[in-house]
Figure 1 (cartoon, each protein chain N blue to C red):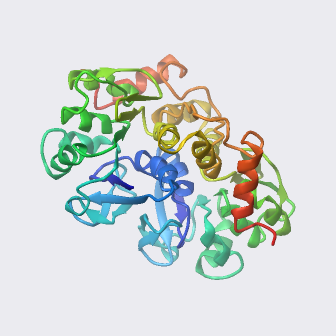
Figure 2 (cartoon, rainbow over the protein chains, first blue to last red):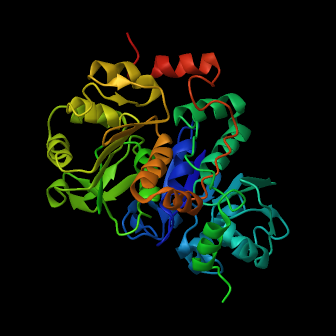
Length: 211
Length: 211
């Protein structure tokens, strides 16, 4: 089983590394980070680079695709090497998935037309504009497509995906393996629970804010 | 404010990237991944490399230190460049922290002697052997030392740390920023909640298993 996580400039690191840390534990799986060409790819903060171990051309037929989000996603919705690879790879993938605004790349490629999907809470309108049916859940499965909400939600999605692939026993083992017993110090992880003024502030400052 | 995350061969990627994704959002902070020398450092799976942007010698006086865990930690408990840097940097740090078995590096350096601390659930005996007082909590603050439980716990610890540094309002903003509203698909994230047979299986297969 081949798992490919495509990287692009200004991706969000936790979007990629959260699901990676879960899925790399699947039995008999090979996990590969891929990009236009092998080598370091810098995240949205400019601080961290992850190394792509392969070029897209080296991994044309993944079983599982995990597309991270991040502000760089906007350059990959309708053309370019990542887009072309995704469209071709999706034809034979068993699962095509995304985290955060990675779903905008999927939707831009037409893969989520009419499908229930999620994304970063600030990008739900944009996801609708691109043809998906925005669904405010932590992660959403619709056929072979699984999309996760913002950034940290990829961990939950990946565990649920692992359970669907290998059964609940495997899912539980992987969850214990990353000691995923979350105890967030605040009730503030979603726009439904965070104070309204923080929600408004982040929304106003986001790249999806209406002018 | 300077935040340094030291990397070493066979670290666990999510240990480092979880807190990174939180702390990089602190106002007026500079975050740096450091290693013996700048360049890629490969994780415990062999699949993923993160790029260290600096050598330890370049960042002698961090305000915050975040030491990840991973099987490679065992080589850094009592000597070597990471150990030497840590001991010196801890003299002036405001916060010295760890995730998962990163606390064994802190304890090996004598920084946790008699202090309450935590680590990966499979390494609690080892933490005691190294002089700390193992405490089965998601994260533990004792003075300027903060230690997190296994792998994913670094996210919770980093949010709590951000709250102590910048106040609860900042902590909430950062939590919403990574949309940290966890909904684990299983009740299996700690040895207290996972099925006993999975706990026993992982414990028997761990590098801390008693022969």
